Amino acid sequence: MTSENLGDRYRQYLGCLNTRRLEELDEYVADRLTYNGQARTRQDYREMLAADIAAIPDLHFELQRLIVSADWVAARLWFNCTPEREFLGFRAPGHSISFSEHVFYRFRDGKICEVWSVIDTQAIRAQLEA
Amino acid sequence: MTSENLGDRYRQYLGCLNTRRLEELDEYVADRLTYNGQARTRQDYREMLAADIAAIPDLHFELQRLIVSADWVAARLWFNCTPEREFLGFRAPGHSISFSEHVFYRFRDGKICEVWSVIDTQAIRAQLEA
Image 1 (cartoon, rainbow over the protein chains, first blue to last red):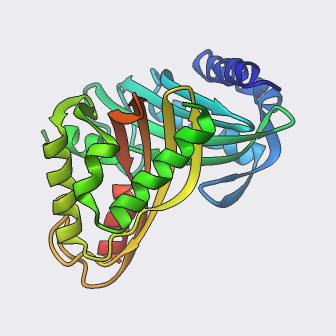
Image 2: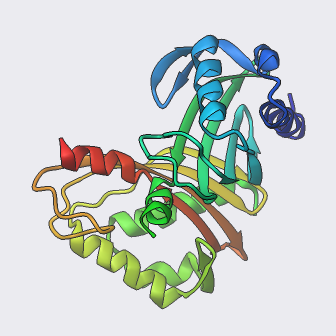
């Protein structure tokens, strides 16, 4: 898969998340993957995403920067959303907040098999304390 | 500059930081840049790095993942270090800690002109509270 194709594929994956078509995740995510070094099944991964969406009904993955090379995708994602339940250990803020996530993905056979994610929890904390 | 060359250049930049040759930053960093969307001069950037090193004398930038495309570099950096003074708003822990940074750089004429950084402060906080 070329870098351009892999970039397109990643955008389709985000589209799948943004339109809540989690039943299509098997097209984009391998049966088994690692998430920040921890072994996960695709079902685990789907449940994590479903829990995020349940806590943040208006969760939308906005792609601000995409860098693709060989089997790797690096993305800067931007979120402007209104959490309605506890998420990432934070209480629901009662208003919308904005924060970024910087995430690296390795693809194998066109599917995500390795994820390294850092979320800007410092920004979230600052908005909760404001 | 090819992706390979830009990757090499970025490794040299990290070498410059790891050997504390901050006086050579003008080879790698543009006169003016943005850091997480904020305008900075190279001198501001150098002072930020010098302050980090003063707070964390054994600060070492370990490159765990490098993705390069066109003018962009995405890096997963790993730190295993012993902060001796307050850093990022955290007290000195009194022991070594480990954490990652996911950072995107745009280069112009071979020099860094735009930086987007997210540091895993959640991991730092967890190790301070442990």
